[in-house]
Image (cartoon, rainbow, N blue to C red; front, side, top):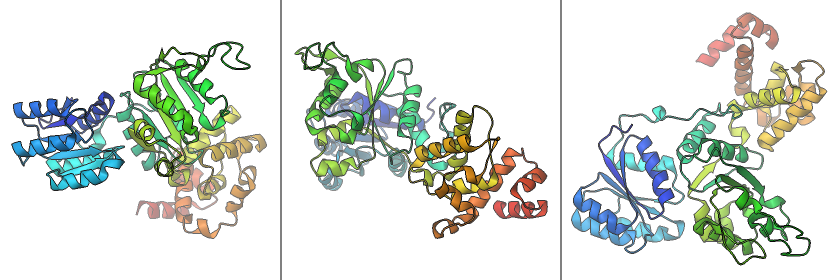
Length: 438
């Protein structure tokens, strides 16, 4: 329930964008009004002055820049924040001289948006930490601060139908984030269909995405519905979208904008209703600059951008992830020894969560009891148990801290048992705990 009486007017011709921004602003405690055009926004402002306006630069009819000039003729006290595509940045900067208080580039960073609103009209009494966050799926690990920030944004994004672009290194867990957004969305009862653009043969990728009719090409012995129709009423997750061939990108853009596809071998468009979540480990903005990715498609899929941090930046997630994988592969409780935990925390994990999962699978195969020891880990990980490298030496105190806390948790807070498992005296453990607290 929104208690603050201050009103933020969101002006954008795309309903998904309005709902997304509006939902986030309401989560901050403000009231939100919406307008789909500059003309409608000006009528609303004449009737009742809001406390702030979020104004898209590109609008049908009167542009956002023209609307800004009209707003300034009415009042010079109303804060106006321009929302602009990357290609319009120069125009937006120029508009600052014409009376805009600030501007944000698409995709809008929600933390930046919150800061801009706070700078313009102040904060609400509702602190950021009190925003409601949906209950996490049992299969989603989120102990680190970096992942909690991502989850907070995903919770705002999920209820809308806006496309989402998930960025992150290979193996960092982009598909898991997509699954969570789908599960939190109104489409949760519908299908989640995943396709990897890098894994589809280029000659067949159009057919795989949009389907084909019987006899459309050699070998098409029967009709195929394709991923888009399979995802009707649900979510389509396109992984590695940066690998999509350039000649097919206009067809994907049309499917997103018009909500229809044309199967290979057919002249009849088919209506589809699927929310797109795309992912890539490429720098798509650079791909656009170098002509390998269409700018109009980039801006269409990038309404919201989420960055999944690499595992090395999520130290607090490593042990919980490892325990979850161990339970999955062993089929029962498996304990990670303190020395094994130290190895896991000291390693850099260039392959991210996928590499950690493979390492734990290997460990469960080699472990004949119910305890994973360093020798059960891959050699490059196990080597850190006795010979920490220069890269890990600087983080050794952090590794030791995490190992102590993990062992205490495993021993349910019993310091005597924890000290025995760590191979140190109880007095030494208490000394180390005091060091951690300070």
